[in-house]
Image (cartoon, rainbow, N blue to C red):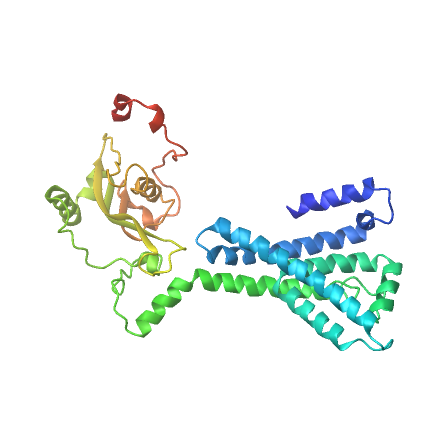
Length: 358
């Protein structure tokens, strides 16, 4: 996104004949290059921050709106503080020393810039503009009793360089990325604390063979199939006990399970969603098979697409065994023998009852 924006700014600087306009300074390649650098750093610093905001509400959309509102308020507050610093310095009786209120306000502005990438980016643009115009530097030095110079290098940590803004962006990228990683792994931390405290929960006993190694993979080692219908229970036990089925079956699925985490749920147990729960079936040669959703779950959410994705090794199961043509696909990374056309949209609303059944 920042590349097209840089091109637009460049076109605007060339098309605008007014040399007093702010965009006109970007007609020079040097200013344009540092503009591109700053907007790139701003993008990298803002991305993890946006993701952090998406975890606070119940909706990602509300999180994005909160992000926009908070950043707008931060930029507006920084602008107000800049005017307060200016007027307080103008009211000062000393012409050689910075007023105490001005120093405090400037410190607050730096703190805001550290926490908000948008404010830091705004200050970087101001410094690019400031360094490009000697008259602006002279005016700022006269009003604020600063010692800015146009001869400072672009990456200098002193005004009017943008080196300090670059360093702040690097810190923001690291800090907000670490916070995002901690939030993402928060479930693991909670589960670890519960285990350390010997807290009882139904996820304590897990399958150590799970490839996920976290609450997504928390599947009890012993699964009770007493609630299943008798024919389903008999088929499951047949598939588990019969060892020759793997040679005679094209597809053999034993106790296939897949669990996902729902990020927005605060409760640890409700955050775990079981899409496929100990599925067992086998398909012989020259056979046709399909997966049907239950009436309660309707057509969506029954785990059909999830099952097919696991059959083609596009998705790793939480537990269970999948054997295709005698090969355990969980141990294979390539040369798979099965594929399927993904479901982009269904035509159920346009089909008749007979067409649906056929």
